Image 1 (spheres, rainbow, N blue to C red):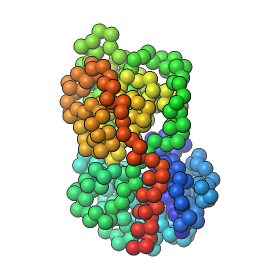
Image 2 (image 1 turned 90 degrees about the vertical axis):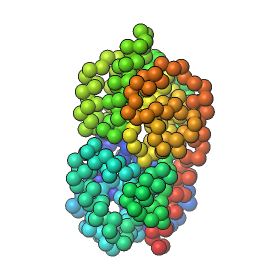
Image 3 (image 1 turned 45 degrees about the vertical axis):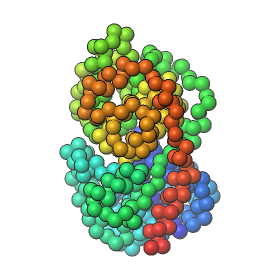
Image 4 (image 1 turned 120 degrees about the horizontal axis):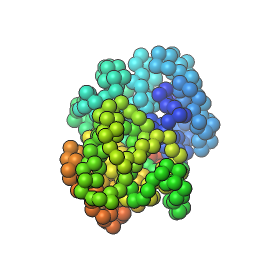
Amino acid sequence: MRLGIEAIYNSNKYITGIERYLFLMLEALGQVDNSILDEIVLFVSQPLDVSASVNGIRISQKISDVETLPILVTKEKLGLLHSTFVPPIGIADVPILYTLHDVGRYLFPELMHPIVRDVHIPQFNLLLEQENVRLLTVSKTSKKNIESVLGLASEKISIAKLFVSKNLTSQKNKAPNLRTLKKYKIKPPFFLAVGYFSPTKNASLIIRAHRKYQLMLKNSKSLVVVGRRGWDKEFERELLLSKNVIRLENISEEELVDLYKLSDKFISASLIEGFGLPLLESAFFDCPVVCSDIEVYKEILGDTGYYFEPLDEDYLAQLMLLPANPRLQNHKISSFSAKEMGKELLSAYTSIVLK
């Protein structure tokens, strides 16, 4: 089977959620018996820095955009198209698996990017009417939410859980490089927040809580926020009003690992997540986690995190005052692996092709 993967919005310039997702998919497919695949065809708007093969399966790239995608999909004679972001309208002769990470676009439409709110939601609604379409998501929580919000039958939704990539896990036993702190003028100890700062990440609350925390403690810790600028104007305004906050955008994976290892606490205040990969990564490197009390975070961390209501900045400020609790370092993350995701991906592919 020739597998097509839509990656039109992926970029080499930034490594955000959609880029990480593609890399994890390819890594996962390389860890399992993928003999049902003859070739993987990536539909991209620009050539991506990816391997030419994965576990013996050739990877080719075809330049495409949203308008030309249906034409190219038909031309390539695919057995299946896996769309990771763009709702592929106008494709009736090829089975489609669409990854919907969460239902944030339906629960918080006012917080979505205009492309998602005004273009993708109507397109996605049309996509769901097609018989050749199934959904893939990244957690049990997200599947349950999709069933509830969209009214879809359970058998139409598969799960392929994320994991910490080999590029990061290979650095587990390496001592952190203190030159990373010097390079970015970070003075330990510090708090860490990582992500693409869109409004549903609720990062402005972290900034406000940190400001209140600083009023309560004279020798307070700095806050380091790592991630690409999104469209959260409130977050940008809060940054301008804050002190002792360090903003980083394009850092290497090695530097990110250094920050995970050296930070006092990892903080996430998301209103909704499909999974929460930075949370899992920070846990892998034994960084205590303080996060919003949402169901998917409990699916990942269980009782090993400090939870707060995602609108309660006062309680988050109090949690910042607490010393790192040793129990936070006993994360149970072994169930999230490349092999497991690979098996789940192949199961989803075969279920839609053979249905």
